[in-house]
Amino acid sequence: MACPYLSYRESADGASFDEARAYCGAAERFVQPMRADVCNDRFELDHAEDCEIYAEHASDDPSVPDPTGAPEAEES
Ligand code: SF4
Image (cartoon, rainbow, N blue to C red; front, side, top):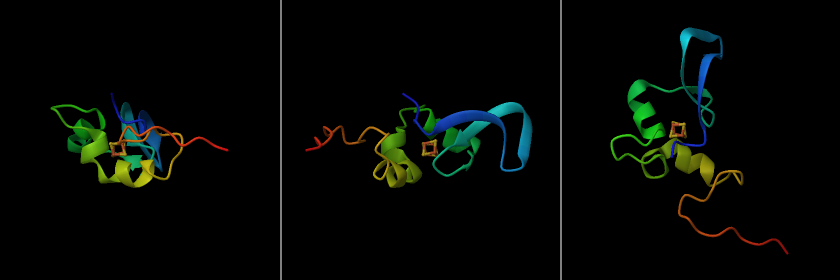
């Protein structure tokens, strides 16, 4: 499963392209092609384990599932 921060855009931040490119919503910038392999979990890569940007943002973002698979804490 691809990273939840990944999307494909034709433009952002003043840059625009003829075809949609991988865009990281966590870093708010376009993703380099080699990084996109991590974003898409290609070649046995895993965004949850191999991307420092994901690790940094996911721990602070309640809308992203816990990368460790730990159950969510119940609110009281
Ligand atoms: S894997 Fe990393 S670089 Fe790619 S979309 Fe997710 S947080 Fe961004």
